[in-house]
Image (tube, rainbow, N blue to C red):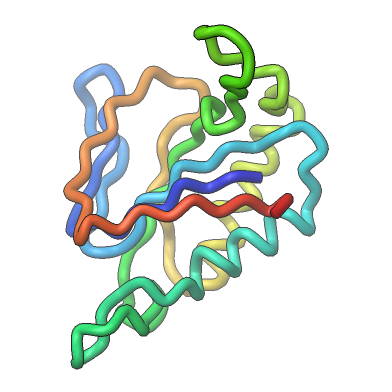
Length: 148
């Protein structure tokens, strides 16, 4: 399972002109489920995202987590994170999990994040054509992969 984690001042997701989710300061997490992912991968990655110390403390040092700052989280499904660009110029998505695995794992990740944060997380809509807007704070962008 892969996550592209961005520290944001705010972010939102629109689908067909309708705002479906939005957050203030916190994390925008693009989540990619890959073939072979397990519940252990999902739980590890959710804990890592919730506890990652990438928010500034009083001295300006990245020493606080999204939990510590009582921040918000928006999770957007992103199968393209599983892309391989090893050969040719057209990405291969053969490693991306199909709907039968990806949908339940995405939902489970969101539920696990809600449990860890103690509040709801914003969500995109799986498989939809989404327009995601964000202000990356820092910028801080981190790639996390449960297989590594």
